[in-house]
Length: 498
Image 1 (tube, rainbow, N blue to C red):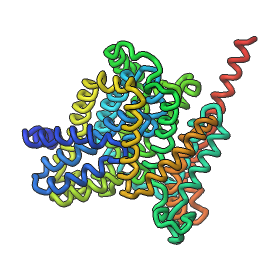
Image 2: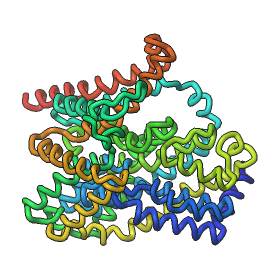
Image 3: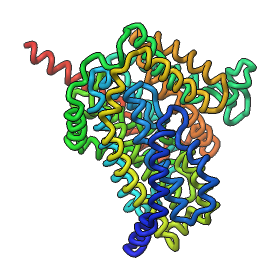
Image 4: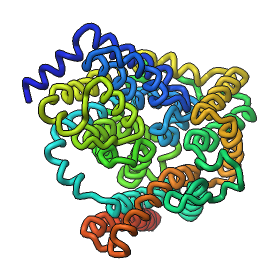
């Protein structure tokens, strides 16, 4: 293993391979950060070039775009409340309020630092987990996957602040919206109203941009000032404070990274779930988080960015060990690797072990380089929050329209964005939490698919499988723990008053 590790490191440090890795990092930090573009589009554009390269060079070019994309995705989420990709939606919850308070530099620095640490933790877990987790992953079936998704839906209460009933209703609305399209079992059209563009359902990017970005643009235009309501102060100090925050909350980064790794290991959950799982867990476990999360708490930014970057290491485990892509992006990379002569599966743990180590080294080195580059430009990025609305609104709106259209190259998605923008505006004005709606939309199809498969394989008996019962106990804890916290908080408040 030592020999394979050294060979993998030597392979990606050759000048041409390293240069191609830097090209991938630059592409990921610019093109991928644009809302809706995503790493899949960038990788698809680079695959024809990768066919002409050797194995190490192809790995450095196409995998570097994917490996560091989550770091760049946080930029627009924090500055403009526009998610750069599926894994940066929860970053908006506390990152954008921090930008509005003049703490953009601190939020960006905390995001970049926690992303680097999370990426390193994910790579280390990938290194040690393949021989350990293989039997565990093989034991999990559709019933266990269904219950894990139910745990995610249980996070709705944690994301709803002091309005749990409104959160449950919003989450239910998200589940209903997720049913639009073709039924996965019968093939029947549901709630499409004979509209062809609704056959595929609502795409996540247009809905997310509509719910979070459009309402903020409306409020920015009405307010007549920039994103930040307060002076930016010492940007260098804000950057230093953000880095310090990440190391101060190192145990939160570790917990969130492990959550991200676990989500990554499970094929089909993907980045659109890891950030919400980590955010919900942090909100339930961090002291005082239920009062401060959603209002500009740096811990919300740290938890999300650590989890989304660590997830990449976890998602490589089923891809390399079993030939099961852990996400849709990795499915695209999977095809590219096969074309250049790399076959994920048993060979990646035996004769091609050096290639596996090259990917681990790439996760570590690429994440560190990207975070350093982003930290170097934190000052310039933070200054964007003071631009006038007359400059900001057209640019952000153009990014939103392009991002929505790029999701599937359909003009109807732009209309969907504006429709959900209207819904998001009234939800914001009425004090209704928007994250539960988005979480219901994300988890609805996954839950339905695993439920149908479980019923077909085991009938109602799937509810009594040992793995299902263990995860159900975890579900009970997720629901009961916030109630226990609220009860203790009320008792402490009564004691203080007395």
